[in-house]
Every structure is written in C-alpha cells, then in structure tokens.
Image 1 (spheres, rainbow over the protein chains, first blue to last red):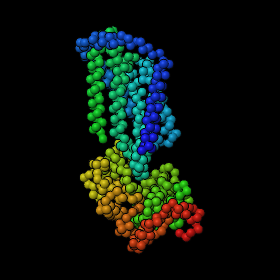
Image 2 (cartoon, rainbow over the protein chains, first blue to last red):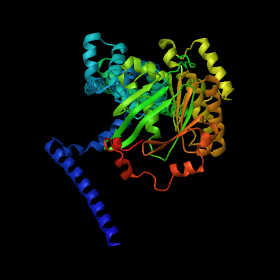
Image 3 (tube, chains in turn yellow, orange):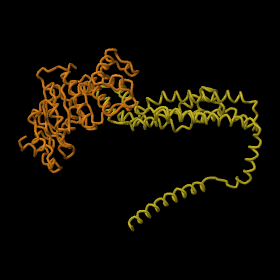
Image 4 (cartoon, helix red, strand yellow):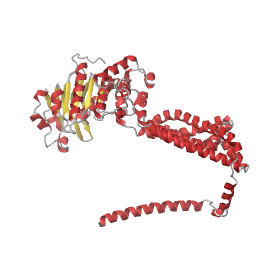
Length: 259
Length: 274
C-alpha cells in the first residue's frame, strides 16, 4: 500500500514538474518578447464593429469569388498531385529499410531543406522568377508539399512489415519490383490519407498565396480587406468555410473507402 | 531452373558447418547431404537450429565456419546479381506466410514470377500470357480457383496457406524450404496443407526441406527425417525407423538449455564424435 502510494506520488510530482517547467518556459519567452497586452483594451468593440460591418454579405461578387475559389482549388489540387509524383520516389529513397544509409540520409536532408523554406518565401521567389498567376502558386505549393509528403511517406514506408518485403525480394524481385509489390501495397491507405490531408492544407495555404500575387482567392482577400469592403469579405469567408468543410467530409469518405 | 536436374550432384551439402550467434552455437553439423528430389522433414525442439538451417540455405544466415553448398553453389560467395538469381532457385514458405496484404491472390502469385518477367511491364501489372496460364494451372492445383481476384487479407488461414504454397510453386524453384509452415493451422488443416505441399512437390521432383513440430505428420509425408538437438544432427534416417523412442529422445524433458548449447561451442565440439 505504501509502495503504491509512493509510486503514485512520484509520478504525480513528475507530471507537476513537467507542466511547471513548460509553463515557466512560455512565460519566460513572453517576457523576453514585445507582447503588449494593453492592446486588448477596446479590441472587443473593434471586433464587434468588424463583424457588424460584414452584414449583410454583398452577394454581387459571388461569381467572382467562386471563380477565384475554383482557381485556388486547382492550384491546391495540381500542386498536391505534382508533389505526390515527386515525393513517392523520394520517399522510397529516404526509407531506411529500402536503401543504404548513404542514400537514405542525404535524401532525408534534402527533404528537410525543402521543408524548412517557408511557403510564402518560396512563392515570393517564384513570383519574381516565373511571374504572377496561378502557375506560380501551383509550383510553390508543389515544392513545399514535397518536403512534407516525402518525409511522411518515408516514415510510413519504414513501418512496413519486413517479412513481406523479404518474401518478395527473396523470390528474385529487383529493387523496383520489391518496392512496387512488397512495400507500397502495405502503405497505400496511410499514403492516401496523408496526401488528402495535405491537399486540404494546400487549399488553405493557396488561399493565402494570392497575397503575394500567386493566383487564387488571396488576391480578393487582400483587395477587399484593404479596401474596407467588409460585406464582400463576408462572401469570401462563407465560401472558404463551405469549401473547407466539404473537403473535410470528402477526405473522410475517401479514407474510409480505402482500407 | 530445370527442376529435374538430378545429375548426381546433391541439392544441399553441409560439411563441418557452424553457425554462432554471439557465444551461442546455433548450428553444428559435421556432415549432411540432401539429394535432389528428397523430401526431408527436420524435427527438433524450439531453438534446436531448424530455422537457422533453413535461413542459411536461403542465404539469410552465413555459416561461421565450414562448407555449405546448395545446388553446387556456395551462397556466401555470391555477388549481388548472382545472389538474386540464387534466391530465385530457393522458394521459402514462412510460418507467417508473409503474403502481401491488400493485393489479390493473383497478384501475390505473380510475385513468385517477378524474377523472370520483364521488369517495366511487371511494374504496371502486365505479365506474359504463359505466366498467367501457369498461375491459373497452379491455382487449380491448390484448389483456389475462383478466388484469384480476392484480396489475401480477406481469406481464411487455410486459404492463405495455399496461396503461400502456390506462390512458392510459381517461383519455379529447385528447392522449397518451409519453416514450420502449418503451425498456424488446426491439426486437420495442417495435415491437408502438408499433403498438398508434398503432392505438388512430388509432381515436380523438387527438393523439399520442411521444419516441423509434429513427428506423426513428418513420419507420414517425409522421405527422410533429420532430428536436430542443440544444433546437431541426432537422427538422420528413413521415417519408418523414426519411432516413439526417437521422438521421446528428441523432445525429452531435459531439452537443450543454454548450458548444453555452450558445451557444443566451436572447439569443444571437435573433440566429440558427431
């Protein structure tokens, strides 16, 4: 009994220490930074004003908003597809159960490097190099997604059943055949689920990309907010919320369908 | 590739082979020769070296010392390309079958043919017509007709076992190694599966090496029984001569513990007669 109590006490104090340290770290960092909490004063009424000025939504811009939303969806979809095509081979190369360390590790570094460049920076570089428009947005989304998808695929491949891979390789299959028939079939549901999840995220990211002129709905977000046309902003928000919710549901169905 | 290559050359030959896992002697075989077309059943307790023996033949374990020759080849002396060609000649049936989940019965069968079909076409799932016909014939042979489109993860244990056998047959190997192939099945299914395996193998004249825990089944299907204890051959002879006495000796209560295994470490082992 005393023993049990001591174990419990030890664990409780360990948990307490963890949370105390984490909160202390956050508070310390906030005190180092320039957080101006007095800005909250009066912000409530400003929020209210913002939202009251949105009503009623100005539906006259609906067709414009829908068309640019379709463009954003295209950017997200094609960008994700391009990323999928590039990331799969990179994922195979980065999976330490399929390649020797001198291939797997540099490929992981490459993926990490791609991932570490913020999307908005990629988009700004591409805007200067390729010009304005949805093509730029698509390339930016694709580039950034390769870093994320490649890493996830590699980690997923590394959890594959070694015995199955050995069984296929042991029947005389070469590396490509082993990947295709021993490794990949085991990972299809997870690969698909994460790619769809990435597509959802890419839609939201692509909506922001318009801010730097990379096409899509972002241009109008910037234009209407900058021009204080809050009733048009309301239409934008409604459309984005509807699309994101629909994508969420679609991806749920797709993931349930592929088992 | 020709399965009836019984030109007097033994299919498998071991001479003074030792396999050491760290300080533990897993296998210590002075001499073992298996002729082409033999059906050898290997009996012994867990840890007696059965799995090590089969993995060594599949070139997944290297002997620490001694001479191993399979189909006239030393699997340890192979480069990458020739190793793949060698592995193609040895089909393996595992205790856990290791079928590819989410793929159909047919796709699983065709993985046995991957070593000899055009690579680019195979990646798209296209196979030569002759291979598809071969697969169909094998499906009929193992009584899986009509199930070729089913995903293997929807099959019963007995059906999966037959897919594993079919895949091994599809490989067109000269030696089939089965490591406790029926330990996941109930006694009746186990007997059926072994009968099927032995029939298919006998029809092709392929050499068969089976690790098993059921002496009665071994007596029924083997052409020769090898008993292993603590990594050593303690029985080698016809199934008729393998009686209750031998069974009791092989599985006797004072099964080889670590002390016994250490006693047959290399060096000390040479002093004793095999």
